[in-house]
Amino acid sequence: MAKEPIFILGIESSCDDTSAAVSRGEFMLSNVTAGQEVHRLYGGVVPELASRAHQQNILPVVDTAIKKAGIQKEDLSAIAFTRGPGLMGSLLVGTSFAKAFALGLQIPLIEVNHMQAHILAHFIREEGKAVPAFPFLCLTVSGGHTQIVRVDDLFEMHIIGETIDDAAGEAFDKAAKIIGLPYPGGPLIDQYAKLGNPDAFGFPHPRIPDLNFSFSGLKTSFLYFIEARLRLDSGFVEERRNDICASIQHTIVSILTDKLILASRQTGIRTIALAGGVSANSGLRNALQEQASKMGWDLFIPKFEYCTDNAAMIAITGYHKFMRGEFSSQGIAPAPRYQI
Ligand code: KG4
Ligand code: ZN
Image 1: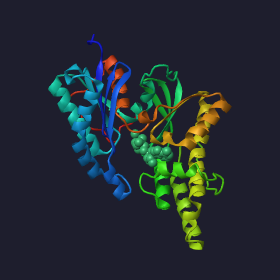
Image 2: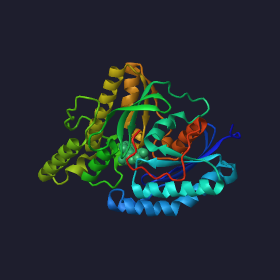
Image 3: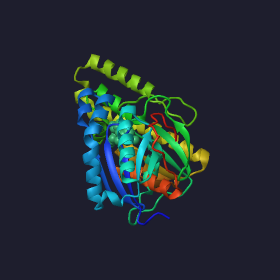
Image 4: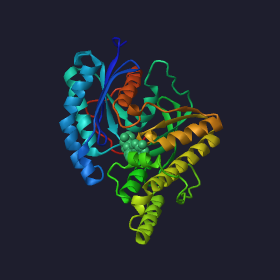
């Protein structure tokens, strides 16, 4: 048996957030994230700049996470890190750091799948908070992914639907870019949408019969719509910004909600969980809460800091792998296309 309590250091560096967290058992002691402002200038994540920023941030972020947890690095039981999916250069920084640190401390190394971790964030314990019962369906929506996953157990997961092109967060960000909002535009669309009419403009829904998603057609029709309106009135976007944002948000949210309802009907599963950065969207939260009361769903939405990319989800996944004795060797390499 490992010595108690079990402290896991989680490290996340798959995209543009450098994050480190320390868990004690199933509870989180710290979760520290450094974002990267540099990408705003380019309207999207630039991989080379992301990996350079990870290199600058990783040491202070890990150091702060350990200090905030109130422990010494020698107290750590293991180091868990994101192996993939993600950007190769970004993953390399976290992977190399985790390997070197685990070797130096002579403690086990644990690889974590980022998409599994988004889902297992629901199992971070908080006083008075329940965790989802198996089996449940998890809608994971972020800037890089859109999936409906059937979760039968901690590590038994099956993707039953996913995007065939853009992710939902990408759809938000691309729509924002079309109307001149800075990257990442998702949160701004949400903000303007609160003041607008969601039925002001209609956009076509993709015709995909199964549980998969598609957002690229929506992006194109939104672009043509805005261009056509601007030809008639150059002030269109300025004058109707709130209504435009409310309408595109409403469309994206209904595409997501409709598929989740279909998945729940098809599987008979009514425990529903949400994960990923887009779960911050107030329109999506409201729509799912409304469906939850209509359909009798037991709905789980984690704290926002555990929804976006974070290392707490890596630490909790690492903890459960540690308990199963699932460790990685020093020969491990990043896996940018790692599947669940
Ligand atoms: O999970 P996350 O932090 O990083 C990825 O793995 O992608 O998700 C970031 C995505 C971005 O596309 C961002 O625009 C979107 O989540 N997002 C939102 C909101 N907050 C973040 N989209 C719509 N409404 C929001 N409130
Ligand atoms: Zn993510």
